[in-house]
Length: 90
Image (cartoon, rainbow, N blue to C red; front, top):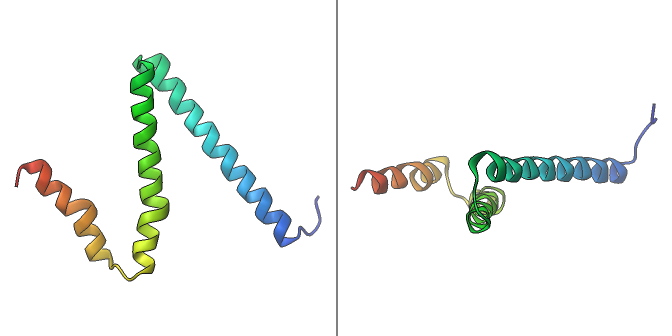
């Protein structure tokens, strides 16, 4: 159909589709929280901050830690075991 795509065009196409999908999911999420849950504007801002923070953590911070040599065990301790202890009151 398209023939052979250049790597640059394929990259731009894939990034564009990914960006569109992300925007679509975030828009759906916003509509859900506004209509179904009934959040006010301040609460929507808080939800957005949490979503952006988690995106930053999982797309930027964790890959950087892995690149600098953090093991899966250390990451599990930081992301799972420590919060479990805090939430359990220990």
